[in-house]
Length: 193
Ligand code: IMP
Ligand code: MG
Image (cartoon, rainbow, N blue to C red):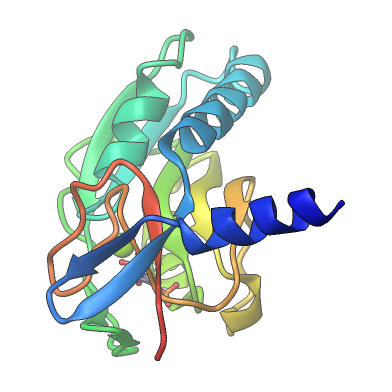
């Protein structure tokens, strides 16, 4: 028993720490765990949307890794495109509403699946959904790799959620701190001192 406790403590102490700019982060979701979850989401989408000819809309920049990993495992007829809408500045959501740009496809009567890196306050997603409705799709679904339920201030419907996480700042797997950290294959949480 004593040995087990020591082992667990050591394991926590050994959590890999990294530096992104001036901040320290520690490993919180390993790449293998992420890939396993992405596969599970792909499986559900392949089953539930097989007859729907969905079009995936990856929201840049943050969703590019999730979109790529997920899309490789979609085996039904589908399309993908990427849209841009920035609303984040450093570590605080600016709350500023921005225009959705990059829609070239006809979305009328389509099943649209938004791909997000994270749903935090939900302000960004609400803006995107509102603007997309103007294109008269048949259905709008949302897949996000991360979700912070505790910071949600808008009512948004999420169809596929990778991981629910506490209200802590994270980087990696597409998510950034001041533009850095997006390349990390694992997800790291800010260490507060
Ligand atoms: P929301 O509008 O508050 O839901 O924020 C959505 C956007 O804020 C996401 O698409 C991210 O770009 C960014 N964001 C929210 N939380 C984090 C975080 O913990 N790390 C990095 N970016 C974040
Ligand atoms: Mg984003």
